[in-house]
Length: 93
Image (spheres, rainbow, N blue to C red):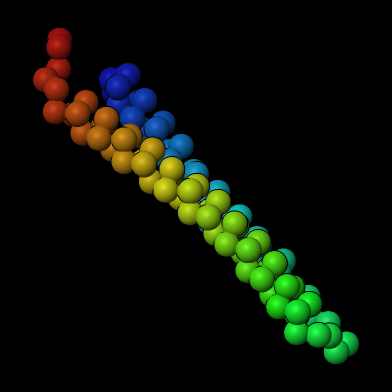
């Protein structure tokens, strides 16, 4: 096996690893989520503030996970391109 192919497989493994890491983070956050509901009667402003705060935290987490998956898919794509190019080259022996 040529060194270019080994590097390509390593790059593919890193990309897939990033995607799996993002999936693990999403699943672990899903398993540990507990909504914070208060039983006392509050005014509309404080309830709305609490809901908006929760939604902003969720949006930031989703953005982070989206960037991780996007980066992992780009790295995997470049690894596959490198592997295809190394297989197309005629062997220099």
